[in-house]
Image 1 (cartoon, each protein chain N blue to C red):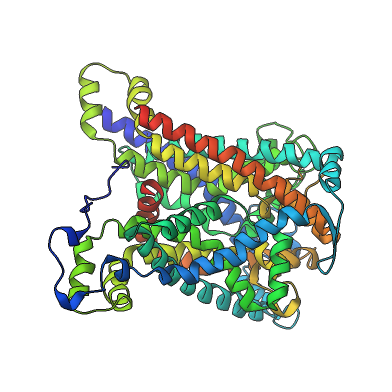
Image 2: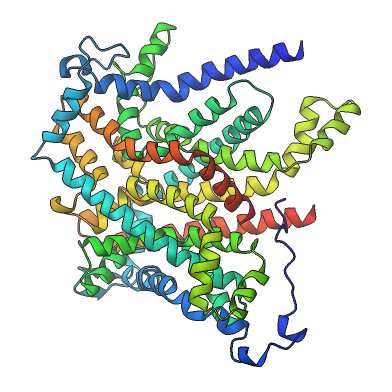
Length: 275
Length: 312
């Protein structure tokens, strides 16, 4: 009797969650596969003509392959900012966890404050301009690094706390300098949390729309999210292309997730609940 | 699991127990964890977080063109709180943050309990719930704008089948903000669910078993075991969602652009509009209002949760 109710409950859960969470995705895929006349009906139906590939090819051709450039820009931004962010966060998290004192406490406070307080937009533009980095890819990379750093530092320091101090002491006794200890001993041990940071932050940076909107305007620098947003107003009647674009830019985060599903879940949970 | 799980690290500094070999002189704990490790990250935080935040207080008191600023006292703030549209955005921000946070806590906890129980297809369900987290806010916004279409949208069509005349989700001024908040919950509930699931796993099974033997009902199990013991996870979920709710911009901007009229404008969208209009001083004043609100809500909330945790 008990197991019976479990199966019923499971079936209900599957049905409800499929409708609530999967139907919108199915709608994206179906609309992206229709001809433009059919797509504008907004119907949840199997396409009369299945033209997904043709639509995707069409999306690429819009405005002289603007989307290819956007993919290159977004990839550059995502890869560079995530790599820098992870290394800097691991270094900070390591020292903040291991040492006590005025500076480490100040660093800890700084990280917490930056985690909570949203950054002031126009003054940031002002700083970037003073540095000559406004509307530059490098400036945008630094902004993304700064934005993701606090969360990553907390994750790292929570994880470093689980690594016995004796390990770094032993390595130091063997004559390794601090850099060697960090890169050879600590960083490899941080691997699970590094995977989490890489995946979570890659998705966040790749999907970021607000950052580039303010700090990286201009057509030649457009990221995929900016292209999608602009696409909305330009291709008013071509809903099939708009949804093909959504589909296209959702693929990279999805692939990351499929590969690292388990690690993300564990890492996020560890960091979130312990930190 | 959640409180004080940090493995026991020797609290006393090592040198007190056994003096280091002579070779190691000068290589004490201090130099093993050099302060300059904090420099690159800390420098960036100072440059791109502390400096803009600190200067924003001054710039919010000026009429500002980026090159040149004129001090005008509190004029921007007066404008902000007197203009009904701007003040409205302040109220909407609070409403939006409350709806999304409450929604994600309730739905997240319910889903987590469901997924932690004995249920078929758990992997499938977990993946499905987490899916929307991966899609960009712009993509989700565009999709739901179509689904919410008052006449041809899938949602109103489905309601029509059951005989309900669906409202103009995004075109009705009374509904627009709440509709966007619903989508926000839909998109973000996966993260809250994950955090709750971790919190639930940490509650020892025997508590439930012995309470069950003593004849506790399902509701009592939830009320007196689950709810109190899942506290730390609740704190994380609430604080994360309040912070992101107060800052939210992308979904609102994609779905309604703050409209119809100004009925779904929030602080972040006003900051953007004023920035676009070249009113940098006013935009920055909006920013200052935003972080004062965030701090004024988050910090007491955090203290309150901590006190309760200690009390237990």
